[in-house]
Image (cartoon, rainbow, N blue to C red; front, side):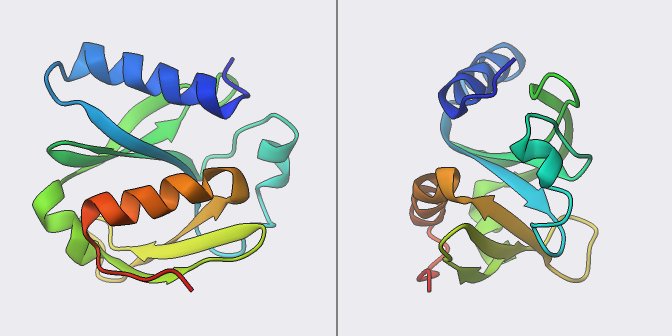
Length: 140
């Protein structure tokens, strides 16, 4: 089970290599979707996974949002797929904080953007995600 970030990222790469040959992952984030990250992430901090835990992967062509499978922390069902060229318009309100950073991301089918909470361990990946996406957002 990938309780380490490096193991999780490698398993996502392996999963994408099998399911999408030729579309290479550039960066992956672990996020908690929704409001206050302190509610619901206590399970993840202790090794569990909540239903609002997702991996967001930026590939050369798309942004993929996978559920995290409970109990295994492997990438689960593909929930959303957004063309990379369109995804930069979906990112707003980037906030960089000590323990939890966040950004708003409008998911397909939603009128309002959803808050994506990013743990400190994924913060460098968040910066890389924003830069590669060309979202034009300066973290605060």
